[in-house]
Image (cartoon, rainbow, N blue to C red; front, side, top):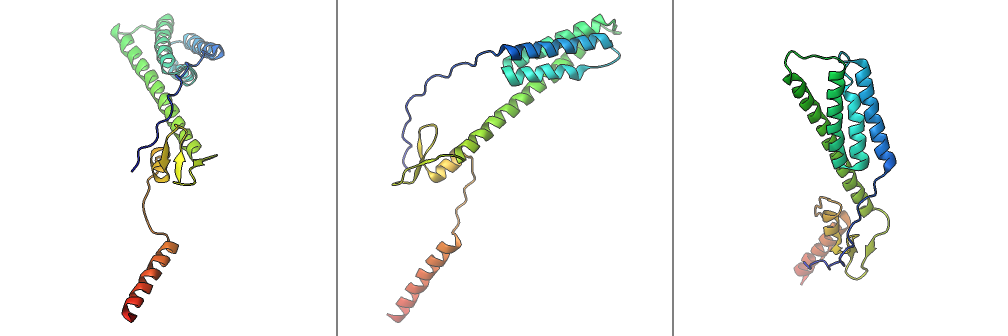
Length: 190
């Protein structure tokens, strides 16, 4: 098997610019969640409201912003919980509850990140199998978007993560068996 040809070195990726409207949206939903939490008091749990800004920050701004928002949401929950007059029988209960909430927020960050990576992988597969495809008319190798030329089977395996199985189609089977039958008849006659 021949090694794929090397593509030219790609230009370094530029970081995404910060979208300030997304930052404002995250801060607005976070502050609204904290306000509702403070207004309803400790008897009504609005813990799930804090998930929205954490999810939005992770989706729009990335994992670092999601972790920062999760930590900030936990701190705001502590402030709202103590500000509403909630007293625990032991002081450390507050910290245990805060850690539990932070872990749940971090699970939200991990889930959003996983879904985003999975979506990008699926989109890459769809782009690789649809639209224009560069195929060498001599060797039938496929030119991928990464600049490498691969045999079609390898292209399906590497780029599309296809599971390739080799079988003989009915037309080829008929031709092969017809040739084999013709040869055996020729040998019997001769």
